[in-house]
Image (cartoon, rainbow, N blue to C red; front, side, top):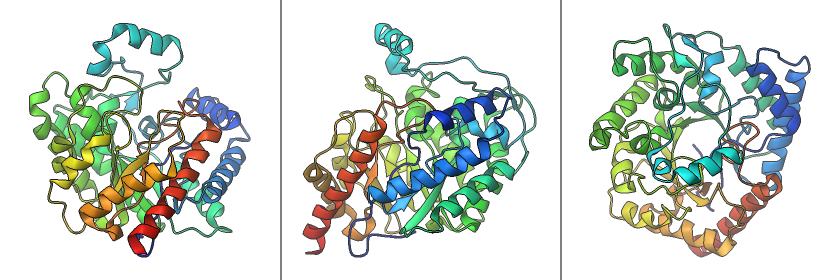
Length: 378
């Protein structure tokens, strides 16, 4: 994994706005009626999104997750055992404000797509969708110069969070099966030469959603997710992996979010070297203080969110620089990379931030990284 050896590098969490044509492609596929031109449309979109990231001066780029309807449910096309749909269970914080929850749903603030359940044995179904993603990303990078490239994959825990188990006898058995089935995807991304990013919002979001009926057991339950993840990564060098944790990429009260003092100790037990986490939104912007009070292992790289992913405010570069410098003082300037709180298009066709503003925010992040770099390196 590239580190900030002479300046602060920039990246983001992964998903970026998809065009209308791309959204039509992924929803047509979801409905079982794939468009004939879909491969060309997706390939072109990946090439375009890479170019836009470079124009915004993002150093470590992704494919924008163009081919995926969402960062978790896409796996039904890659591993067996999933079918049907599952009931929607809102996070605990939204249950406290039913009026806001209703307004959010009626205003299009709740994405609509299938969340299949686990109804049978889990194993690898097809590696072809991943290979297409790898080929598209390689083609998009072939005539570009970037510091590094990363590709997202769902962690066993986040799959379990959004796609409940109706087949395995225990949750532990379910997590183990998910880890073994997803292992092939993880290893293939790293073998292709990219940084593997594991999306693990279950470690933050889990306490007020998946584990909301037993929040007192958060450390034990989330720890089981980390164990499954580490098992899936047993053949992968941790320096080629980064992990994203968050408390849910939605505008809401978030007053039941687990504090960083609970989440970070669990996350630090995971094998990935890089750790991306929210640090810009109003509920978590103060928690750099909690991180400063912790003992962060010397081999970990921190990638705090220095721009928010749920508002159309464009952060001032000076604010971005200040956020970066706080973490540089904690672990050293070489072990900090600037990132975003979460993805900007977690679900296809849905995003709180206007597409043009997304790239303006990324550009402001790069400008803030320049300011911080001058102060940190002189």
